[in-house]
Image (tube, rainbow, N blue to C red; front, top):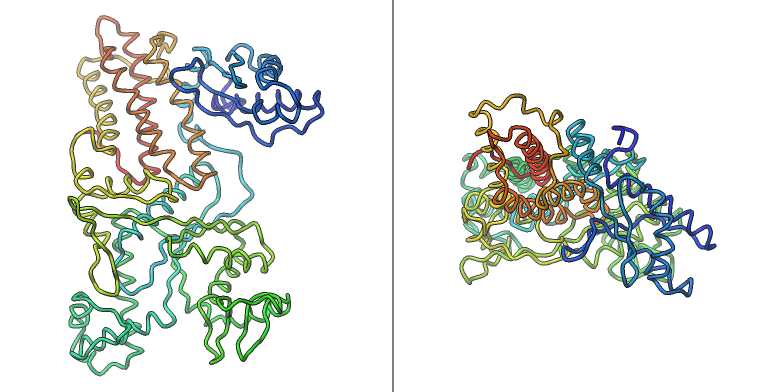
Length: 545
């Protein structure tokens, strides 16, 4: 398998399958598939990779799916001759089994260019991921932490795959919320009652008292700006300690300085997507307005919808073609409005929102409620300090963002194999200890590329080799589904396969040096992908535990 011309084994298989299906579909007079839907074969069945396209098209062709898969298998066999076998399996699958030489060569491909192992074809899209974007009115809570972990992991995965991507935090430093923050801080400093809709809690009073004595004479506008800067600094520090870094911190006030709201409003009017009624300005074509689509209130103040449209217009004008917004569950109803707005801006396909569900924190059997206004909340920093950054980030990454997340503090603290992140990190540390042992025993030349991989023949060795093949595909799926949970699960499965290999087969054996070197190479392949996978999730890969 020449390095560079073919690349990763699964990528090679996808190309071969696509060619074979295109050829077969042409004979049948049907459109070829847009993609080759490859999936792992269940453990109890024979094979490494499964293709289910026959199930999809058999009905249109009015033939039995197993007949379709059998016919396609002939084309597939011709395209994979010498490195994979194909078998038609009921009710209509084509299952591929890699030859051992192909698995060995795939591992060599990983060694030759680790950073290129998962790269995709260059993308023409310029991706902007906007996430967290918490109001600068308090500390970050667990929901913000889930958004931070999700956005940062996705940006790392996109970059690793070779896609141009930038990250952005949108600072809501204008409007009623920050005005209330200023009023609340001023009242806390002066010892006055907090405004009815203001921000309460002991932290507000404590923060207010930390400002210098001359702050008592500050106007409320200065208190507002002081509060914004204070909480922005706090949030930035929390995120940096969480190993989340943004390329840009974009302030809403910049839109006002650039007159972007008025420009956007005029643009929408010219496109027939904004009109006046009852003294207010509404989004949408005339006659189809809804109350929740007001852009300018009758008193002349903009709703939050208009600056949001102006902000996304600014993103598009900066040259970004894919806008990924990560929002909390309370924004679910906002998606159709924002999608309609971006469509009105002329880029209907650019908007890709991710709505992540709530995080439920448990201490024992008691769920801890979080509420910024009342001051009764658990901050992200508190949880990170209690369970550690690694456990926090991995637990956030384990679940699809569409699913609610129950965060078990006790499990996250355990130093045992019950704790999933500890389980994976332990395997990485174990492999590092194996290499230290090999060096103590004076093994010559542990360079993996010089090992005779043909000596790897055992079932457990093959299982690890096949799992290494899937790493690029897992990242591809993460990018497609906009969720890193596939990677977290993959790392758990990879770690799970290492344990039986290590228990059944001696790695460092001075009586069989060549086999030891081959197994050390396999260990290095697993270790390198565990390290890379954990890094993509923002989790460390310790060498000792």
